[in-house]
Amino acid sequence: MPGIVVIGAQWGDEGKGKATDQIGERVDYCVRYSGGNNAGHTVVVNGEKFVLHLLPSGILNPDCTCVIGNGVVIDLGVLAAELDELVRRDVHVAPPLISANAHIIAPYHRTLDKVSERFAGKRRIGTTGRGIGPAYSDKVNRIGLRMQDLLDPAGLHDKVEASLDQKNQILTKIYNRHPIDAEQVTEELLGYADRFAPSIVDTGRLLNDALDEGRVVLLEGAQAHHLDVDHGTYPYVTSSNPTAGGACTGSGVGPTRIDRVIGISKAYITRVGEGPFPTELFDEDGERLRRDGGEYGATTGRPRRCGWFDSLVVGQSAKINGCTDIFLTKLDVLTGWERIPVCVAYDVDGKRFDEWPATMNELTGAKPIYEYVDGWTEDISGARCFDELPANCRAYVRHLEERIGCRISGIGVGPGRDQTIIINELI
Image 1 (spheres, helix red, strand yellow):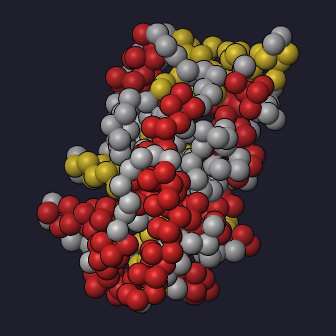
Image 2 (cartoon, helix red, strand yellow):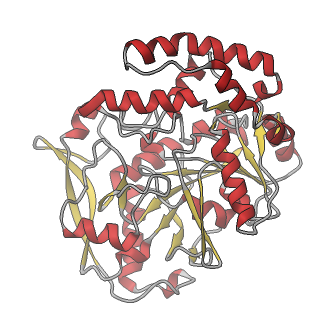
């Protein structure tokens, strides 16, 4: 039975939560392998919307065991609040199993994230201020806090104190802020120890044993390919590896155990934060996409930048991640357009690029070259098979498929769990 990776094929917010929840009905384990609570996955079940930040999207399927892998950075307060919110809404689920090696976002990470972003001014990256980058920096610098440290109070205090030796110098001498007390931070973190201690396990061994037993393991990324710290539009990226390769390092599942990689892409494209975006719209068309698509961040509420579908963006993602399938979301949002542009190449200082540019300098100066597809006016939200879509709508899907070089196997035609068309089985 397969190991399956789900990745974002654009700049995030593609609807990975819907796709993962859809696939999650048929898997045994749903694993979040990267990022932190700077991501938000929206799942709609029976008309009720759930916004998940750290919990895997499979959490709403009672037969699915959810896991938070070692590649995630965890804000303990946010995780606790998410679980409490489900209980408040009368949704009773088993808490996720958590890797002993997953890193913890401490209060000082959030403080440093906010003050450094403000200090950067016009050079800011556009972070959410939730401490994600500083937590990953500590991880790489080998001074991070891990979930297993909650089981050793004395050791946790020593690590917090050692980390703050440097950070307090930065806060007081560079940013003119008050120093942070190590005792207070340790006490706050240990306040969650009893709650989460039973969930802290060796998740790498757990998942490999599950695959050995023939279980289906779904690995769910946060953010997207073009926000990957190595492969994205650096420096306007996240601090982790949401790509398919990151699924292996962030979960402990080896690459030979991955059978399918499913890229999630909107039928148009959006981006939050700073950075290049060749097909971005600044006119009424962009406003219409934002309005009709409800394009506001699930975590931050920030309005998303909107633009036409870019086949170079998704084609690059499909290539680098080795995508076997694309799941196309929000196709219904394009209903009512007379003609729909699709970016098929870039013009950079008079030179045509038919593939993703190698440098950020080229990408920053890229202007989209469009082909146009006839639109449709029929309501497609009730379609449940490909043949029920209007002819022009089907032609649009096939045009995208040809341009990105990867088959489109699933289509979202509305926010509901049931508003999905499966062309090729994803499991």
